[in-house]
Length: 151
Length: 151
DNA sequence: TATTGTTATACTCTATAACTATA
DNA sequence: TATAGTTATAGAGTATAACAATA
Image 1: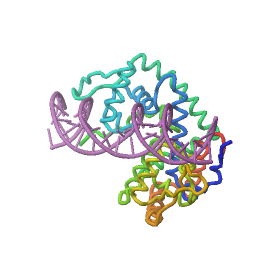
Image 2: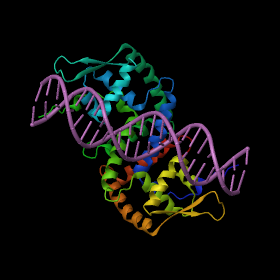
Image 3: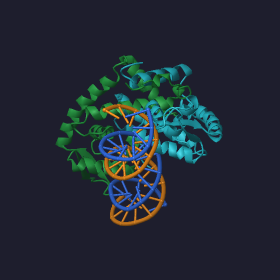
Image 4: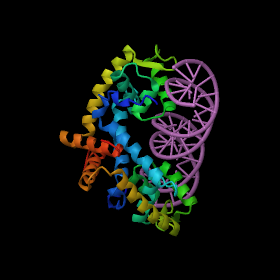
């Protein structure tokens, strides 16, 4: 048997840090997400993009990037991939020839619906030790950490 | 003036997801950490390693890896870098010739102390919208998300 | 002049698999 | 047989800087 006693370690300085616990939690949540979505090969980021396009049909890449909090240049490859999988379509914007109006394809809508059910189960899974009230509290607190200037 | 109205976007499906808010919060916190530590070039992960070594002198790389939640193989480069900067020392373990007993150098102890003060200020900074009680609540909730099986 | 999408590039963080030297 | 450290390798995820087309 292996010497499995990391519990005897002192986590003294780390244990009171928000940043540390944020990393551990996110790591656990992302692992569970990937596991839950392994059949559909959708990452957390891709799910966010699909959701936001569905909820805001016709938005362009820059608006999407800002909304989701990643760089414009990074978004290109994300959309490229989703377009290649025929989940997202780039339509030429009628009002601004520089930009694309993004939309889900029928396949994209179908997959999003399927995946959303899995995401719901995944969320229940990771919050299994939390009451509904605690889950809402957690999200509310996370929002206030993420946006120190506002609420 | 630019059309800065992402507030009019719908975040409908994302807004109730723990995973999404976890990512946003972590992103904000890590950015602030890097900014606060830019003079010392210490990443969140490196700070965690230095802290854990200081609090558990003589531990080996595998134990450290498990404690902090990254792979053994990943830890090698982390320790390599800290050793190159003369912050961490690899001592040959007297009891097990396969492993190293890790310790901070004097320079490492000095830097850790200096950086810990900055980390404390950084933590206050990111939790500026939270009371002390709320901060404790947040950490407690994050722990329960990270470790679904225990508390 | 400013913005959209894009490309080129690079850096961080992470994991898996296989090796070596010990245990 | 199993473990500690290591190497090679790869894959996300991210950012910066610069460009062409368009506003």
